[in-house]
Amino acid sequence: MFTVGMRLPSLPVLPTRLRAPQPGWAETTDVVVVGSGVAGLTAALHLREAGLHVTVVTKVNIDDGSTRWAQGGIAAVLDPYDTPAAHAEDTLIAGVGLCDPAAVEVLVNEGPTRVRELMRWGAEFDRNADGSLMLTREGGHHANRIVHAGGDATGAEVQRALHAAVRRDPWIRLVEHALVLDLLRDDAGRACGVTLHVLGEGTEEGVGAILGRAVVLATGGMGQAYAVTTNPVVSTGDGVALALRAGAAVTDLEFVQFHPTALVTSAETAQQPLVSEALRGEGAYLRDGDGKRFMVGQHDLAELAPRDVVAKAIHRVLLAEGSTNVWLDARHLGADFLEGRFPTIMASCRAAGIEPTTNLIPVAPAAHYASGGVRTDLRGRTSIPGLYACGEVACTGVHGANRLASNSLLEGLVFARRIATDLATDLPAQSDPVSDDVRRPSDDVREWAVDPAVRRPLQLAMSRGAGVLRSATSLAAAAGTLTELGARRAPSNLASWEATNLVTVAAALVAAAACRRETRGCHWRDDFPASRGEWRGHLLATVTNAGALTESWEELA
Image 1 (spheres, rainbow, N blue to C red):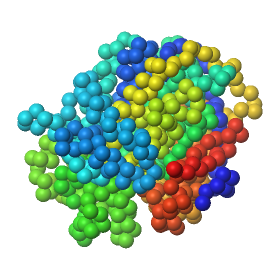
Image 2: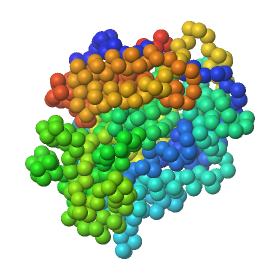
Image 3: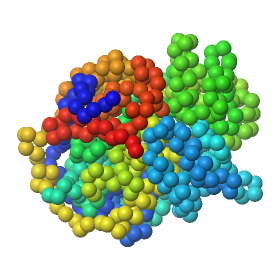
Image 4: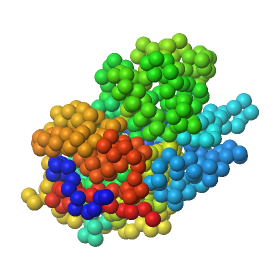
């Protein structure tokens, strides 16, 4: 059993601040929102409804995050024959005993209203001939409750609608091509802004500061910590790394969900195309090298079992066959149906030289979603006053040890609204950051930047040692590699700051995975293959002022 002070794997000393020049400019707003996906833009729109001025900071362009890549849809109880209780039950089962029931109740009960609100903002979802919403089913769901758009382009439609709504509001300031570096805090320890590096022209270019009465992190995931991922190249764990440097609590990082069916191609790309499980929801089958449907008999939902179950089953087949992929069979669904329902998947397959109407689709698991993140309460508040988090960067307690399919976009919608409601009623006056936060820090502050060249070896080490299948030996090897890579310093720039963030989140993930000596949800330990009741709780990671990573244990009631 884990106890505070248990020896962690040898891991790198982590920076408590990124090495960066003194901010050359500053501006002030009410609330700084970091990230421009579903969670960040929803938070911004609700904060504006409360009459607050908002500055949205985004790393590249407003549409370059993970939201637009979501294929399957949004899970919500929109069918009169479905119930929030049924949605909650499916969520709790998928989470394998680690979901926060109160957070799940919030999600399933407030979710339908948030989806309808999204439609009022302009999102257009697929409908049946009679005008009713077209609903489908995905893995782990026992009812058709997935609303989708453009067949398999739900994320793109959600992003389009939110983007348009934000652009219509002149009081939402958007700063693009801006990597957030570190959190600013006032004398009372409250979050009061961020430092950031802007790539642009004019007075905003370079390192600056945006001061606010609160900060909302909505930076997305950390899939780029792995060699094979469905996440875009910008998903380098920036928000979690920022929170760790600031001393915030981060939890459940060991629970990285590997999507069972990423398209396997011969090209080495930073982002693998996703083959949504909605395709399995519509009747596609998984087959092994001999053509056998290997999920039949392993779970009552067969190909629609929760993602961790399917990913593990695929991995077993890959190990047994010595192959790089299994096969998804959608041929029997027919060309007309596939063309109309899954145009994005069809295009991705054909770009890779695969014709799904006549051929099997090669698929394998890929890092897809971080179920853990910055620890929050039911109002999105973190352990640092004034710092909030929502979306994939946050750990609200909804997902537990394994996210239920299509609950992610819903979580972003629901908890972004809750953050806005909290801030509308409890927003302090603007305060000034302590002087050390806006000038060149003294020598005793641990700050550096890591060589960008570590990115690929880090990804390979994480996939080998902390991927779908883990053990004490593999995790120790990953930790050793991280320690060596983290010691490689480099001049400060965008690439080196991203590399520093990747080392930080990878180290925290490996530490948690090494501590949790059981198999649960999407955390699979080969040396501890069973779930254990004494591990029904959460590991909380923090970084000390000296840059040491520590873990503490929180027992579930």
